[in-house]
Length: 126
Image (cartoon, rainbow, N blue to C red; front, side):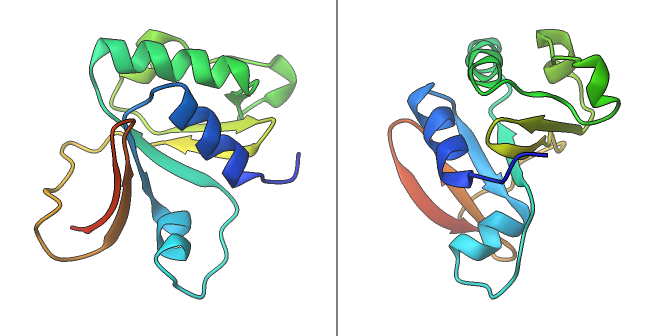
């Protein structure tokens, strides 16, 4: 397994024009929580154009599914459009794609999420 380079992964996602949110352990770290994390968890926007951008970025960082890595299974548009959780490994380290039923509104209170879109970045809580 390669060392995790979250900055390279985030840079690739951002430069690829992807609309996404960082969630999970890295979102907590980016908010100053004293925790360790081993993967990058993202929630991409669900529209077809964004899924196409996500596929291009995943291809550029050589992302494959972690399950049976010797088979080098790559995600497809239909995979990423499904409601399933996707665990991948890439040249930047482990990357997980979540797709919750809804993404809470940034104005509500609760857990920290870092939203990173091509046009802006901000920290929000849900």
